[in-house]
Length: 335
Image 1 (cartoon, one colour):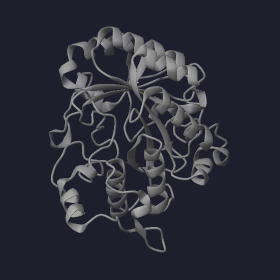
Image 2 (spheres, one colour):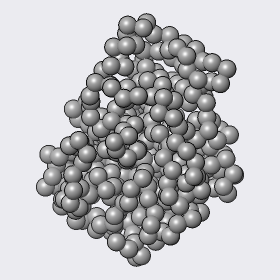
Image 3 (cartoon, helix red, strand yellow):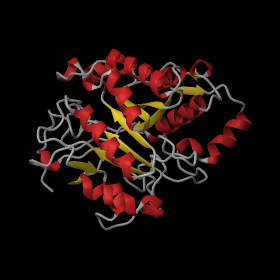
Image 4 (spheres, helix red, strand yellow):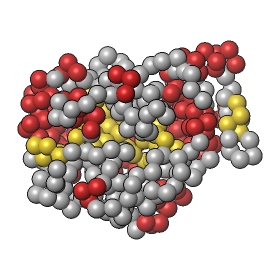
């Protein structure tokens, strides 16, 4: 569907998983997975003004706008009122709604409008994935007053150097490492402990040690980490960049789980000369039990009213059968 003159707040993009769940698209999920969060994305005819090297929505992408992908799949555009009607009918299918911003000056006001409309009609918690570059502290307060209960901040890169290389000066982009972390800390003050989270992408060139330190930093401030494995977006500047080896990602997933569950700290870990994790500082019998539970390898994200992860984004992180973030809990048998 073309996006010319189809702009937020009258129109929004919806993840392909959400479109399937609400009946806008036909199809089913691999291994009968179920989506628990309706993910919405702001849309503007001018696109996103950021230039992040790994993002399919970046203003500096190589491909044409109609071919753009975000988190591996297309995001079709629908009238927001149609989506509201579908969500009212299908409330039993999901536990949360998430609105994702793009880098545009008027994005925050549009988010407030969308939250107000959703909360007036649908009894589900609402998250906002914010863009600190265009989000002020009064905006955060307004998001909460309108009814949002959680926010996410997509820092993505584990170090200041990688952030600047792929999101800031290295690509002529507007984002700043300091702004993102300061906004995260203020979001925790406004929304409360554990009601803000940091998105991090493994495989942008950081060491495992650096990623563990970023996860620990996010948790030490009072929030948690929503972890992704890098996947090359077609048309992005990093479309030829390779994802991290599965072993590397599994080690980081386990580290993230231990840190966010207060079972260990990054300072307890042992690393080799290449920054790879050698030990977690957890007794081997306990570590084995945690690994075989499969829980560390599930998608990490905002929870629903039932206390379980709602934003499970089935297969958005990597195409099946090579599952990296599991949208369901199974005993871990992968490599």
